[in-house]
Structure formats: structure tokens, C-alpha cells
Image (tube, rainbow, N blue to C red; front, side):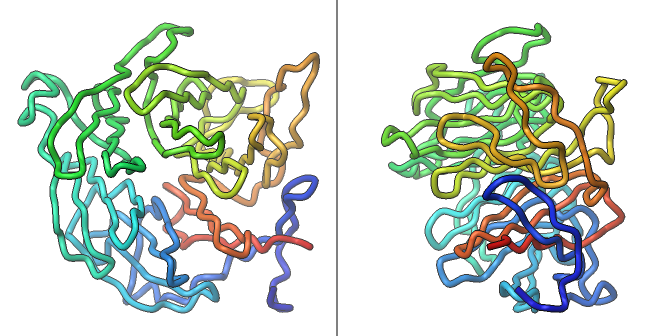
Length: 323
């Protein structure tokens, strides 16, 4: 860690980090951002940041924050970014487009829209937020701002089926209130699809063919996508609560980290996780470091990069892991 980093230390237990708000060296005049939605690290160590600024959808960094390149698809709703081998999957919530690109930004595949492939009726809303690629190449698309299904396509882009769907009930296993994010979880040895039910403060796991396996409730945390790194699950908490007001509030974000037993072990920027009688208590923002955390990227060193939505057009903050 650079000795020049003088930010606060956040987190708990073995997952404590020093915050570097000035990590990005990009010139905001040349490379402006609106919302910094998501980030991934490629095998060569480069970090790919997705923004919804039409001038530069993707900014490419090294771990020191130096800009390595930029390109755009002209997407004003660029929202979801996933890495599969040497390719990126990008979702645009505004147009409903889901594309596969090279690391240089060349589109090599586009999935059909939900109505075009028979997944939805023409009147059903489709606004995809995220993708994940399974071990056999199947692509799972989370329709988080649309009709709340997870759509499944094969590696060639052929529609296979869907699961989930919208529910307004407090408890309805296998259905969603905002299926915001999706990832493949290999930690148990059996691949599972893990999805975010953000309005319910839940992560939900399914088999690859869409059978509900389990649900984990994180009271107080309106999470974005799940990110699996090593034996842990990381997520940016976009919205939070107040101690005396349990409604959803902006500018109350933090990061949450779960172990392989689905126990929260650290909340950088938030209160320490507390369990009473085996039940997790409400988690709140503790330090006002973040506003609205939209994603967490975990690099090969264990450092974190936090992307934020609606937070003053800030670039990602780097969290240097403390020894």
C-alpha cells in the first residue's frame, strides 16, 4: 500500500481496509463518468470499469489507478459487466441489449430480447441488469428492472428457459423483488446460481436449472450483485436504513462480506455484524465513506474496488487490505 494513502480504516476482523478515494488517475475532463456501475479484473491484471457515460462505457486501469485505455458502445444504460474468459458480457437497461464483447470492445454476440426469443409476451417489461456464465457456457440474465426473471441461454445464444418472476409478497421462495444481480457460486463444489433479491435484502441460490436451494436474509442491506472471490461473497450495499427508520434510504451504503457458511464477517463502512440467537441483526452504515455502493471488485491481492451509483460522478474507491 502506498504510504500516501491516509484514508480511514473500515471493516472488521480479518477484513479491514484503508480507503483510497483518490485511486483513479483518470482525467475527468477527458474521461467523464456518470455512474460507475461495475468492475472486473481480467487474467492479465487489468481492471475493466463499466460506466453509463456514452462517451466511455469502459475504462481500463492497472491496480495503481493509472488509466490504460477506454472504449464505448454508446450505451446510456450500461449497467452489468461480467467476465468470462477473454470476453465481457454487458447489459444495457435502457435498450434491453445484452452483448458479448472482446476485451477491446468488439461485439461478438448479442442475445435476443425476451419477447423475440419467446421468453416474454410482447407486453411484458424487459430491462436486464446483469449476466453470469455457467461452467458449460450457459448465460444467465437477470431481468432486475423488468419482470424479475432469470433467463437462461446456451453458449450459442439460444433461449433455454427462465425461473423466478416478480412477487410482492414478503415471503415467496424462488421469486424476486428486484432481481438485481446474478453470479455463479462454485464454493460448495456444486455450481449454483446466486441472485440478489434487493428489495427483500436477500441472496437466493438456485441449481443451474432454476430449482430453489436456499435464501439468506441480510436485514438492513439493499445489496447489488453478489461477487464470489475465494471462499467469500462480497457485495456493495447500495441503499441502507437508519437506526430509527427502517425504510430504504439513499446515501447509506457500505460493503458486506459473507463467508462460506453464509455468515457476515465484515461490513466495511457499516456496523459490525451481530448475531443474536443465530439471527443476524439489522446492519447500518457506520462511517459515511460511501454513498450508494453498486459493486465490489476483488483483485488478486485481496484489495477491493468499490463502484458507486448516484454519488457525485466519483470514480471507484480502492480499499487496501490491512495486514
